[in-house]
Image 1 (cartoon, rainbow, N blue to C red):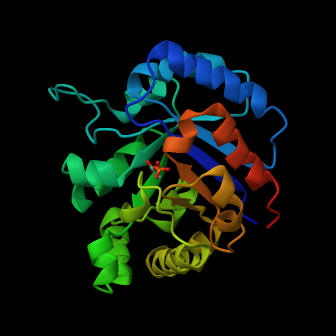
Image 2: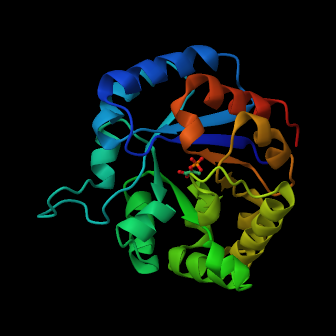
Image 3: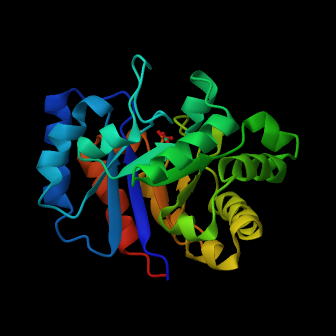
Length: 255
Ligand code: PEP
């Protein structure tokens, strides 16, 4: 059985005092939520402050990106070890905004995945197609390319802390959510491809999160799908009420 994971990607939002306030509210609102794992990913600048707030809670903390090198002359970049030392234990990798806006290629995404594992971070590898790719019937091919390249060099044994996120680019921040059937179909494709790459045991045990305009009113139908093991939430993770409602929707889903 795979436990659900609800993750919040705060993107480039939240000054430190706002991040601390949101973390405090979530800690209180989610006190009784034990059936679902919860992860929040603030900006780097707020990691330490949020880590302190969450230190006596079950909520997990992660970053939104990392550099693949451990240290060096890489002005403006942050390594996995730095994330660890700031209190983070998870990291998002290959988010479509990184791929589209900051040039994160499949190959670089793969190097980041290995760097995350070497630093002892739990990676959440994000994949997903654009609208044009979907309309051209290339969903499976795009997911296969991203997963084959993204997971290159990973052994089944090293995949024990891997989480995947299927995030159709056309649904991120647009308010257009994939239908539960569309999301389930894509998740089944992701699981099949991961099975081909890392074996059926790994594929069956890894959580695959859905991301793309998840809100309190659509979360439950998505989370009820057999291959959807949680959500990666952007906009709605910035409001304690909305994010908690999504977590509680997950609590109500028995798999
Ligand atoms: C995301 O940033 O990963 C995301 C899914 O954003 P939103 O929920 O706002 O679509």
